[in-house]
Every structure is written in C-alpha cells, then in structure tokens.
Length: 223
Ligand SMILES: [Fe+2]
Image 1 (cartoon, rainbow, N blue to C red):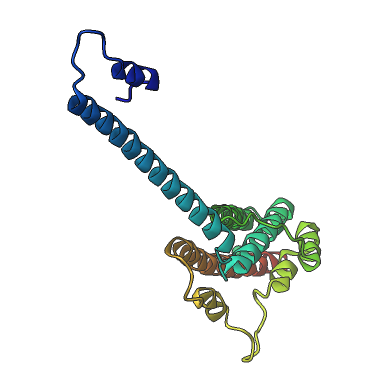
Image 2: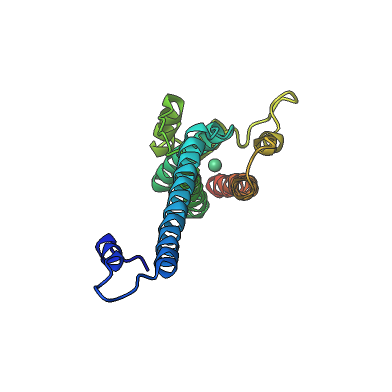
C-alpha cells in the first residue's frame, strides 16, 4: 500500500523530547520508495506490453493477406443464387408435378449453397459482392416461360449429346479444391458443395429421363 506524501513528510517531524531514529525512518522511506518504483516499473511494463500487443494486432490486420480463394467463393455464392432463381422459376412454371418436386429440391440446395458461401465469406472478413450475370437472367426467363420442359433441360445441357472435347463436369468441380492454401473449414464446405452439385446433376438427369418416359407414354396413349 502506498501512503500519501504528506504522511511520509509528517513522519520526518520528530516531536520534542523524542530521539530521532534515523535508521528506522530511512529504511521505511527506502521501502516506500522501492514500492512506488516497483509499481511504476510494472505499470510501465504492462502499458508497454499492451501497446506492443495492440500495435501488433493492428499491424497484423493491416498486413493480413487476402486469401487467394475469395474470388472463387464469391463466384460460387453468386452463381448458386442465380441457380436458385432458375430452378425456382422452373418449378413454378412446370405442369409436371414429379418434375416440380425434383426442381424444388435442387432450388433449395442452390439457395443453401449461396447462403453458406456468403456466410463463409463474411467469416473470413470479405462480405459478398453481389454480381448479376446477364446470361443467367436469360436462362431464368426461359425457365419461367411456358416453353417445354424438355427444351429447358436441353438449355442446361441435360439430354443433349456432348462432344468428346466438352468439359468434364466432375473434373471442373474438383478443380475448386486445387488451391492448396484453402483453410480446413472452407475446404469442408467446398467438399460438401461438390458432392451435392454432383448429386443434383444426377437428380436432374434422372428427372429428365423420367419426363421423357412419361412423354412417350402419353404419345402412345393418344395415337
Ligand atoms: Fe449449383
């Protein structure tokens, strides 16, 4: 405990008739001085440490390098939002109830993917920058139209013969993980996304085949 300076000075006054105990007083003064110096030293040390830590934190934040995969996450979040709009519009326009079920399932997945990647971008400190794709708008218009479901499948490349040179969808998706700097949480999200996209592809291909069977059956019934 530090006593006020006034109290210390008072101790120096020796009442009349008493013998001044110089050694005792000097020792007390020395300990009080040492006490003050020690506290001052540790206070200064703590303040210095705090300022160094704060400085390092601020400096670290300023110098933190932007992860190389922010662009990929942004592109996926925007593309999946567009995918949701497409499949939701198609689900609302189709007259085929079985196809509608499949389209709604894919639409919900697309929406969830968009939110999940937007969430991850926020966690990494890079909020999503929404980008509208004009080409995507065109295909959403087609999906919402009264055009035949078969035509809509073909516009997405489902049910059409692909040339041997065309991109392999599986390989294209897998390349999303080729960046070796991807952190584990983002990698986990990308892995789930890749598998669900492939499953949605299988679901849509099966929905197309099922639709074609129903169309053939109806034609037979009317001829
Ligand atoms: Fe998708």
